[in-house]
Length: 87
Image (cartoon, rainbow, N blue to C red; front, side):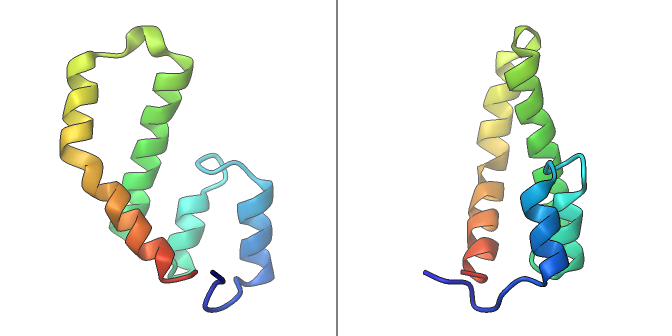
């Protein structure tokens, strides 16, 4: 499948050459109208949690992981739905 419309060159460059949270990738997607603001915030939080899981795994609280999985799986479905609009 292909995108409905190509991304502007500046956005494409920033998304493919820089780190996701550090450079504000989700903010770029929101500003470009490719992601809703609420989902952008959720993705930043998800990325932060991923960093804790990968880099500070000794601090993980199993109850927090279960709560996140239970309460935030819908964020993945929202991401999928919004991403599919641009494929």
